[in-house]
Image: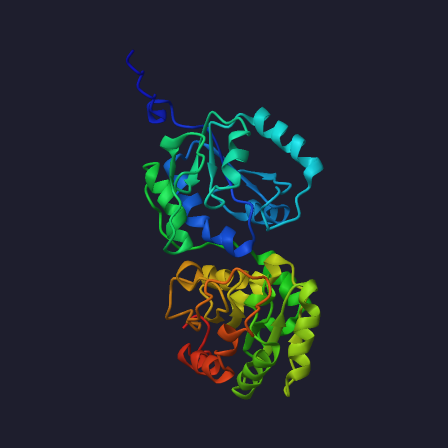
Length: 358
């Protein structure tokens, strides 16, 4: 008996309804923009749906390549959010009812998510897969890259689909309303003293540089004539207050007061952002705002902003990198190796007292 050849999905009409699954946090989502842009330009006639965590609906509304958003309720084993188990049956029922022409798993290696994607009932399912792991439709899956920048890893999938790249730059679309809301929140943002933003928070404690070191850098920037603006989420308010109390100069504390797009407008107009390796770093990269990033524990080759001159990243090689701990069990050697003076010197290389658009 002769086996029938496997039909090639590319012989079918171009997909009209495409969904991308990436249920991750801010920085991870922004790194997916170049791959989403390749999908949009490659199949301009298609409706493109993003499936993500609830917060990402704000981003999906602004990104020009996204048409629809579906909220993902989480799933056991995925650490980005607490899984709403009771909501999973309704989510799967909706996905099966959608009957997407093409569902792409851009969440990661696929070890946990590929079986979930198979249950979603799309006509075709593609994405990333680890060697020897399950792939619903092997011809549409590519090996998960174990090295390289996250932007390039995700573009490996669109490359395999035969789609042309449309740049590797990020996008964070702001509008005048965002800038007006910033001016209402803090009138000093426009027309006043030039300012620096310092963001001491990060999703995991293991990724945070010490608050007292942020304070030392903040004081140095203040002595150079910059106003200092401290940012963070409402959950990071106590951490930001520690930075403020450790400073000898006054600061504008906006922790918990800046919604996503207002925060973007604030970073857009800043002379420099000093931060951990976290979502705001990718906002600065998307907006072209100078930044200095302290990377504690993260895989620098995977997550550092591509423009190393505009966004220098300071980090220390340790045997435990990349870190797999929420809290460091090793006295946080990678963070403590980066001194305030090192960060201050890096801010000098960015010419932070020059006009922001120079």
